[in-house]
Image 1 (cartoon, helix red, strand yellow):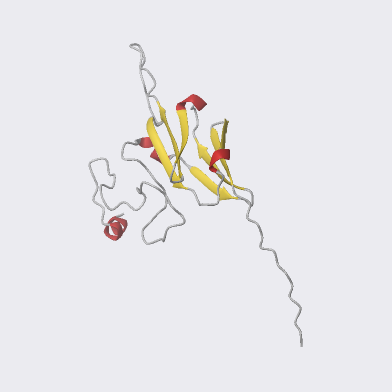
Image 2 (cartoon, rainbow, N blue to C red):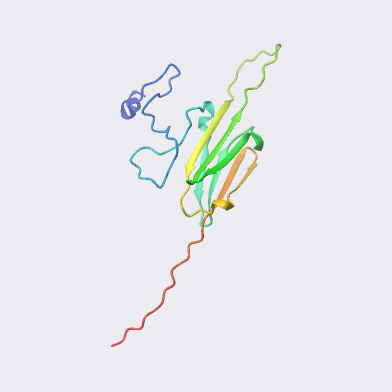
Length: 160
C-alpha cells in the first residue's frame, strides 16, 4: 500500500482514506478529454460509503447506455439529471435504518448515505430523448445518439 501512496502522493486520515492526491476522486469523468490525469471514477466530497456505486457505460451504434447498481433504493430515492454542458448526474441517498429501543445490532455492513456520479456526455447525443428505468436494483439510462449522415459520394468521370 505504501507504494501506491508514494505513486499518488496521498496521505491517509484516521479512517485510512486518502486525503489528497487520490486519482479516483475527480468531479467529472470525461473520457473525451486527454488522459493526462486519472479520469476513472467520480465522487462528490459529500459522499460516504455509497461512493462505490458501480456504473457501467457502454456505447452501441444507437445509444450510450449507463447501468448503475442501486440495490434497495426506490426510484423516488434516485435522481437523474443532465446539465446544459452535457454532464449526466446520477445521485441519491439511502437512509440509515431506524434503531428501536429494544433492538440489539450484531453487525451493520450495508452502506448508507448519499452518492453522486457524474459523466460528461459526448456531443453526438440527443439530450431531449434521454430515458431512465429501474428494475431489480439496477438503474438503466439510455442516451440516444444523433444519426451521423454518411457523406454522399459522387463519382467523377475522368476524361482523357
